[in-house]
Amino acid sequence: MMVLYDEEEIMRSYVESEVYEATQKAQYNEKIETAKEMIENDEPIEKIIKYSRLPKEIILELQKTRFAASVQ
Image (tube, rainbow, N blue to C red; front, side, top):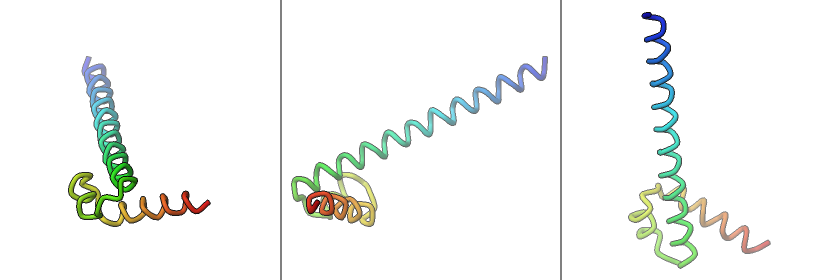
């Protein structure tokens, strides 16, 4: 009986971990989309940082990607 409990506990822990990871990824993707939209609207970087809650480095990388795509 103890083995069954342990297996259930392991599965529950695994599922919780997967749900947490999926939630984190969805939140990150939402931040990226917010930043991209603000970049498209030529918002100042300080404002993008404030509202997207992304680090400056990531926003600068998104801006580079946008610029590179528009050049091609």
